[in-house]
Length: 284
Image 1 (tube, rainbow, N blue to C red):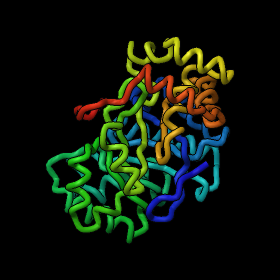
Image 2: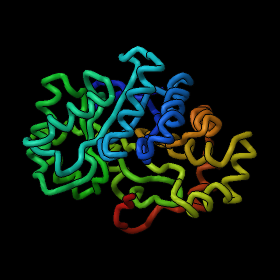
Image 3: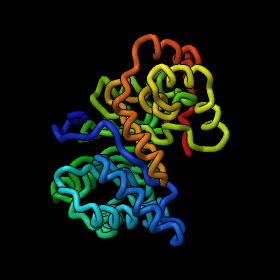
């Protein structure tokens, strides 16, 4: 299952994230095996960043890719550049370091992690040059709200942005007020990080919610699978859950097989209503 991007390149509808990986050498083998397990079970989209473990997560992904030996053409690897590295002085150095850690010749998607002091025009120029040099296939942004997107699109080649990665899950639906529809109208994929609200009590509140549990029972599924299926119900939305547990990884992968119906969506919308006013973008 995949989407055709504005660039005509193909992006899988589901992937895995690697936030918090590569931070502890004692966990390296477990983390490498987790990414490897996902790859061996059909996952082709992997999201990472130079910030994660200060490059450690990219090393983890690189080792897993080497171990899995999947045809490069089947893979969709995304990484992100620090805002302070997103200018002409540093972007190409950062990009080449990411590629080296990953053991790759190019990235399928390169994202600006969040807005910084480097002018967007300069970042876009560098992204387009990186495409011409064959270092990346496409580029996008992360943690951009609607005003940021409008400013981006006013810049020359700003409309070449293919992805906006934002925090999105059932209990955090601020983007549904205006940003999500804005992206969809422009054929920009919404990559959802923290799709299970993994951070602490909020995640538990979602997974233990009675409405979600009842829908899960109806589909012979888990609460996590329903939370992911909800995101994938909508066009051009790609969840990237992170897990080091093989059981949970397989569970997340199989969420792609769950097709929610209109009644399910109505119940979830009632229990977790989308915002009826503009909210600040949730970021972690």
